[in-house]
Length: 233
Image 1 (cartoon, rainbow, N blue to C red):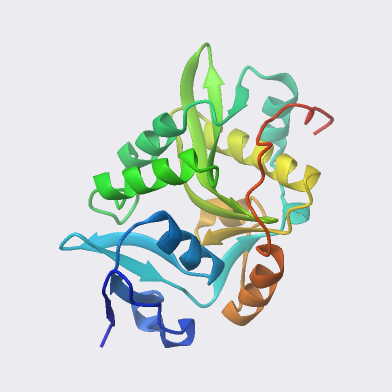
Image 2 (cartoon, rainbow, N blue to C red; image 1 turned 135 degrees about the horizontal axis):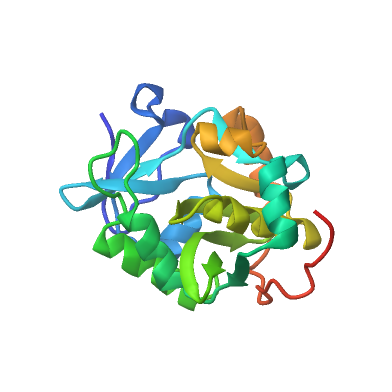
């Protein structure tokens, strides 16, 4: 039986997550900032809804990327060196989340980014926890990603691309920012070939939680900007 959470009910232990259901842990609860931040600090994230109630997951193993293990392809390195794309941080958070919601995903019917989810992450962005990294071309938003930064931990949520390598371009600049500020890990949540091609890999949930608890022991970073991150790729 999957627990149903009331507004104030605590999350159950992550060890009770159902592996046969992709790590589903609980259903219900409100998408309020404190609830979401508590979830991320515990290694839990919301993904989708059932009858309007959020679904909470903690999969085992966990897909992560250690910034020092990032592997940009030769074609991506060329774009990073010579353009024509440019990057912005937190320039259009709403545009990024809308781009992610509108992008079809293999094996998914519709989007998990509901109106309530959108409003929840916009609120986290206003509070300084959620951030976007955006790819621009000729003044148009063509790709990007968003997620949360807590302490020295980044939790990736979703990415989208409207042109070749646009999401990878944003991801590369995210990794450079995280390296510059000594972040230790990016939570990629679940395995995809796309993430694996960039250097992400699966680790046991126990190891993920041990690293997470050490890295997330702090507040959000106020300085979220691509300034000063130039250099050789």
